[in-house]
Length: 244
Image 1 (cartoon, rainbow, N blue to C red):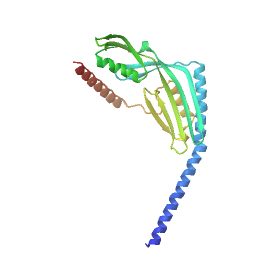
Image 2: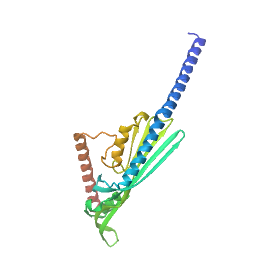
Image 3: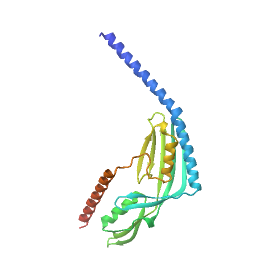
Image 4: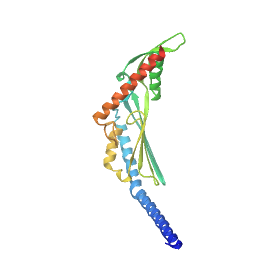
């Protein structure tokens, strides 16, 4: 193959690649206009109805989140919901926010001794925006050497759904919704349908604490629980050695 032939082949390859990019962009634009945008609008309408209904009936479900090193934190939903719907040209953001009050009397009452251990439990609760230190005893340096802990306070819960024309899929970003901390899911635009909305609604109403994820099989869960127990035991021994 001569030089001109090689150049012609390369030119054709580039033309084909450019045409493919144009086709992909056109298909992405079509999906955005015909699938994702209507799906996001339908989701916003659903969440608006959900927030109004839950607020009207003053739905106050109780649930519990495990907090490693302390135990289960029991909480009750505060039925005051805030929905923000922001469609902006090439992107669309929906935020659904509410809060939960800790049901302190249902939470473990834990007696803790040792400066390091007291600080560790206090810090653990503070990381989640909670408090709960009671009956502290001090040494001569005004350091807490003994205390009882029983979680109290409140924490925010938030769902943010974000779609962007140039991105693949719709992001569901969650804070304190399937446990303490942040998590996220991703769905295609054509998955924004009544079935998904109903599952999401039950999740936000706390009928279930799982959404869009598979439950761990029992053997896997048992291994994870055993690892957590070993880590906790090692941490306790380290703190005891430090205090000697």
